[in-house]
Amino acid sequence: MLVSVLVITLASCNVLATKPASLPGPGTAEVTIINHERPNIQVDFFPFKNSGCKLFSSNSYHCQPSSLLYTLGCTYIEETPLLGGLTPEYPIATCILEINEDAGVADIPDSCFYYDGGFTTYCYQYVVYKDHHYQLLKTIAEFRALYAPVDSPEEALGFVLVSDNFIAEYGQTKNNDYIYSVQELEDTHVETVAGGYVVHVFDTPGFGCEPFETKSVEIKVTYDGQLTELNRFPVYGDSSLSGCVD
Image (cartoon, rainbow, N blue to C red; front, side):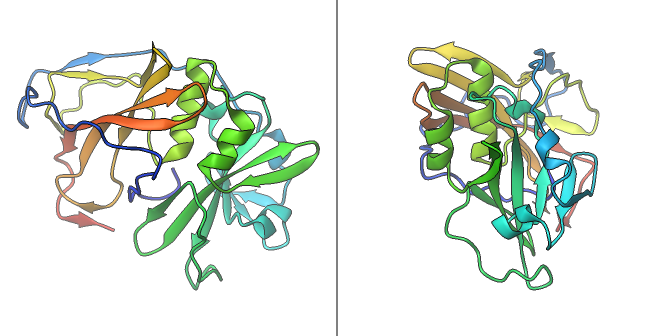
């Protein structure tokens, strides 16, 4: 992601459970890592590469005021390969609106998938290239109208990743700087269940104060694209960070 994390929970997600009582306390020395293969999917980003947005980092582009995407409300666009499982297979980019006086934007939009940031606020939306035109999706309801039904694990993953600042992790290994609070740490994966899918992702704060705790989050995605948070519990904290990070 472009910026640090401030989690704003979607109104469409209802927390049904909390950390299981059986989890061991922080400082677990022995942790088993269960890896899962990253889905072999890519997003079509070609229509966005010559859209008036200049390369800013490895997967992020800064949109110039003269560009059409800037006028749509994108200060930055990002390539997010794991959205490649969505159908229809329209080219899609993450659209990030920077909200502060220096960026020339003072008002926070009423409609965003989620908000993020510290001293500067960022509004996350999505833009698709459809019928030779850019179309801005401002809410999860608009996203659902375009992409539902959800008919594959890869598409369920995409629905979850757009809904909040969640992270998909693959190929994890034990990190000596981490204080684990679980005995098993499992990569991102998707389970097929009755009525849809359960997607396992991570929520990692990019700013704030220690213990900088990463949490595992489980979200059910129904075939019609409704999201419900089932579970959320801490899996590790980063001991290499101390104090507060802005």
